[in-house]
Image 1: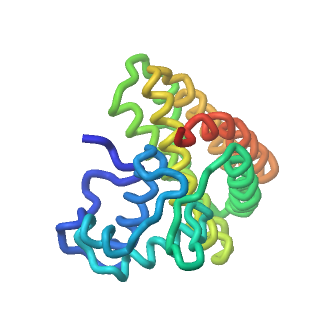
Image 2: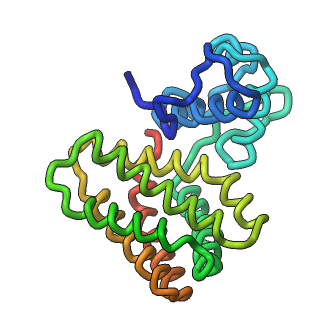
Image 3: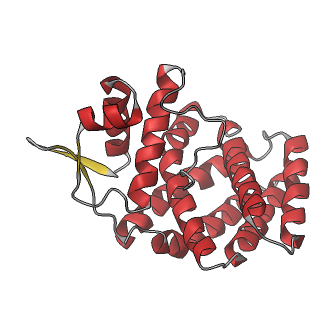
Length: 238
């Protein structure tokens, strides 16, 4: 079974009962997954009725998910055509990373001194263990995914700026879709170097936060995001 981007095994499926917000999030994740896997191609029309039948949900979460994806630049609403998948380019990746860098570096600097030190030390221990792993497989990648999400979420929720945290949360679905597509591309060629590299980058951020150095932690976050641009570009659907 193909792994859906950012959708853990416990996430509700179309046929199960879940609340409205979960259904919208699920549909958005599944559509992003299919776009980044190349199952939904650039220029393809997304018909609400067809998607509603396929995902076994009402038209409301489908429509809301499409609006959410339009807000992240993945689809367009064309006059008399409805939702259309956009063609993604390297320039799009660079612009997304530029926005991410502005948001997350700011959040990191403001989170310094506010962030839970116990959780930071736990993350540091886990990241150091990741650097030492010799055998890299599916469980290694899943642990890397959890640690990546945990660190970025912790920083956003600790930044002390509700609107900044909300904007990061609004865009993180897109950020993680790019991340997972890039990671899938690395896994496909049996290249796990990037996972170890990211663990080191994350550790630099965590160590600076533990030390209470706001500028150093923001610089470490900037280096981390910049280094990922080339990998995100390689993960674009072809």
